[in-house]
Length: 276
Image (cartoon, rainbow, N blue to C red; front, top):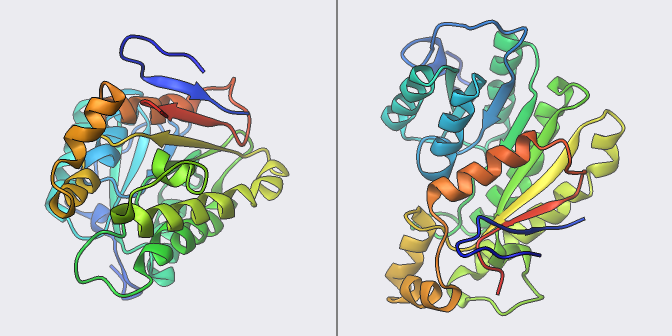
């Protein structure tokens, strides 16, 4: 583990009714680039925040980016336009990841358009939202992650990479003190990470790797704001304890770097922000 004055990476260790709205066929489709050379990436939860910034950074690398979103169509379209402006291709697919039919339709759309998937960025998560049913956190943060991987894996060629995005409070759950307000998310995302890591042998048999990117509270994102509503002052307290909090750009940059870093081996974890 190493630390700079403001460290980025603190360290690293070893149109159908199936439930998916394929917005990409119309307003969200960007003219196709040379698909033979562009990497194809699917980013879940990419209409805002970290996921949106990851999509944009992949656009800068001239990737073909599949922008998954659950309900924010206008925001997804704006992300797609930015990806195009930066040199990439964008394709938006609306899919609730807790709906297995929607996930299957989303992956079918990727296969029909691109024929393969080089990068799978599992960014979507939740569990603090209001009016969600009991068990939603586990359904999204564990079950849906596995469902997306299971559906997408047949499209991934040797050299493909899966990146699971998590938080320090989830990654270190049970090993470091946590926060009661975050417990449903921490438990379910830790379970999701464990379930994905259990797939490493199957992934490796095809030459596909899995890396994890874990972050401290990320300044400007939805989860800290929801936590702040329930526990006023929590963001300031964490910033004071850690010395700084990573920004959306900090975290997204680390995720995109992890997606391309050939020196990482399957199962490695990248830490963004203080782990103390």
